[in-house]
Image 1 (cartoon, rainbow, N blue to C red):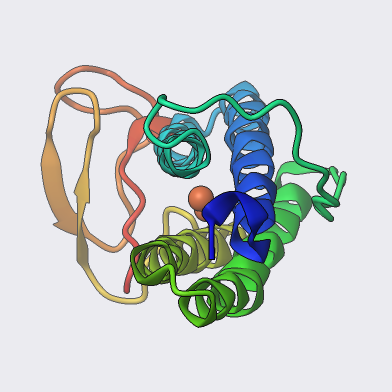
Image 2 (image 1 turned 180 degrees about the vertical axis):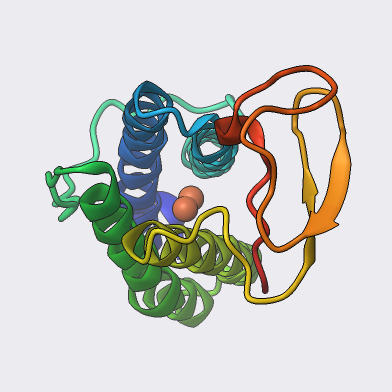
Length: 194
Ligand SMILES: [Fe+2]
Ligand SMILES: [Fe+2]
């Protein structure tokens, strides 16, 4: 089967559109987080945005055959949501979208690609689904910590790190102002578990 005549081509276009809007949404979320003093969450959003745009480029390269082909139009129903809210609400909403992509959409696209004989594309959908799952796990922990107001609290002493100067200290609650560079609490790297 030719890629141009396959369902996989439509799925690649859908995934490309989806990744682009996710890249943009993470940038909006970064602005929201930074405005509330959470530079650390902003940095995570920035990293996720870069990841999504890289995924978009990978799908784009398949669609255009590494830039050798031009495709004038692919009709898609992207099916992605337009939702927003407070920082916590948005983290929760985006996290749900990531989970859906990781566990439903991309595994489905991977199976279709393999059934149509596009083994490599199928594998790529599977690998990218794993990244989306890691995005989901990150956001899930962030909104849970924000919701419980324990972003900077730990039941036992843990190592905290300033993302600006690299200062580290092991305790239950970290500094308000970094003793070395005077960076804010919002610059402390948030400890996450995977
Ligand atoms: Fe992605
Ligand atoms: Fe993602």
